[in-house]
Image 1: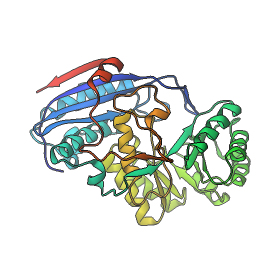
Image 2: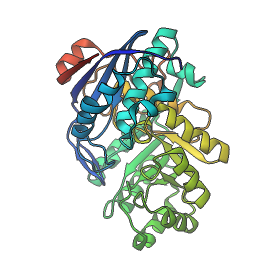
Image 3: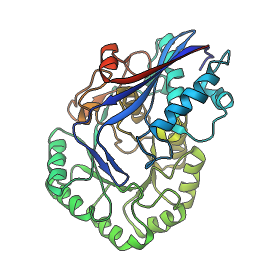
Length: 369
């Protein structure tokens, strides 16, 4: 992508209401707060999203910390550089870690350049699909509620249902969902690293449910243990939290710690790195899928574009924001015959609605040269 000069920036903190609390092995989100970054450049405005969670339970990143980092470190540095591009961003920022903040800057820079060029993100990535199959995520809840949501999703034509699990909430809800929706719907389990090698017997019981994959059964730092587990299971293991870079994806696949990888831009540090992990999987014949973080529509449209890449072998976390957010900063989409549309207008997503930004916004911080 060509060089741009950042003239000013705005950091919008927004509060997005949820239809229901989001429960996983990491904890509970009762509402979704995100940071929206607007970069004003010499070629036009660009928007990106920092999708860090409220607490450092999924990643070390958390919302308050990333807001402080962006405000005191990253944005002031961007505003001292005459020209910047995604390829030179790491040199400009000098950043170690903090992938969700880097992802926001990458997205905003790409958005500005793509809008100026009249191109969509899907076009930039070479995505030909106009829509992608929907995959829903069902959080930890009582079994009856989990089954009810799964049935509703299946009846709407959804092709993949992912159920969050943890010790004590695993075999029973997965068995109940499988019985309720039948064999035609792909069923995944997401453990968010909640199990340990001592739980091998239980994980082997899950192996008999015909799951499409078990996502991140062990903690992120247990690659060798994950490789041992994969040799014991027929069900493919897919890694999420354990993969923080393309190099780590290579390590995991070489070790046999998994058979597929979640290509999640906020966790990896940006669209460019998510594409690089996708390419690692494609080159090695491994599975890949587009992961989500309950983003606003700005970030969710990035997920949808990534889901259309040719190496994505699994249905990803690509439900529309209307499936989990009661209100959004961009127009929400509906499921159409089990699919959701990929953004095909210039930029990475629709421009946030000023009225919605005002109604959902908590604070705005402005930065200038």
